[in-house]
Image 1 (cartoon, helix red, strand yellow):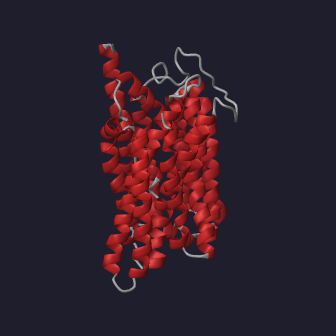
Image 2 (spheres, helix red, strand yellow; image 1 turned 90 degrees about the horizontal axis):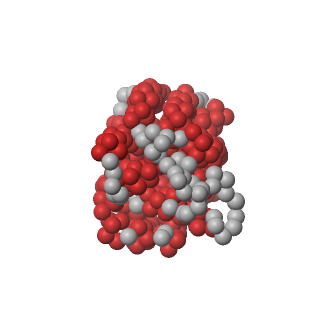
Length: 398
């Protein structure tokens, strides 16, 4: 039975967590609509852009690995203060960059802060679900998708009037201030279960072995879904611009459709998980998303020369189906990882998170190298395959 005081704290924390997830989506995806301009400003080819994106992968892996340990020792709120500001600093660096080396450094800083912040809010969400005995992880990630959608629409709508520098720095600074305020209303260290609570848990776990084998498979499931998500965010606008001739601002519509589908699916996701179960839901959504995405690219790209409007509708429908497919995966895999017995939730989540989140940044880099030798549309076969594999890995979810 949850006490009245604890219930009040949980309700207040839930509202703060909704805002935190939205801010995370706003900041981290704020540069997506401006990627074509940023790529051109830094004089990058497709393969060069893919190489630079590896810096964000390195930052995200480093941030997740360090944050898991720090959260276990100091609590998620304390770690999140540093991580959220770090992420905003990285976005400011991306905005100001005119050289690939500085862009790579800024992406590393952004990735470092993003993964730390993401892990903190995920630990908070798991703890809040346990306190309230109610599924809410999917709706929290719906707020992330809502933030990503709004920031993409903003960036695309002002692309012809406002520079990337003003756009990104304004978003980053404003969000950092809001983060520092909202963090104070999240669950305190005594309630976020960062150290595993009363159960015997471990902060250090082996790299391999029977005890951590499920974490590897859950991590690979996350990896596949986040490869696909990273591809949609980093290459969607470039696919529309370079291979379909879609102009500035409108070429951000692919990711906007993707994010909108994720919003709707994730807000319905908690009910869907209760009805179908997370394992079945991830399998079905992965199949529909992967197949629909593949068909839309195969049809829309060659159609764009003769019927550009029809092609634009079809490609946006495909990206929307991809968003539908990916939406339940992150909440399902992270919840499954946090529930593994004998390991502190922050540490088990961090292990799966490190494996999975690297895909969000490494995947787009691989697409860049593939696109250099073929085309962006052909290279998109890689994230589509990753999404299908993630769907099949649903069998490891308990």
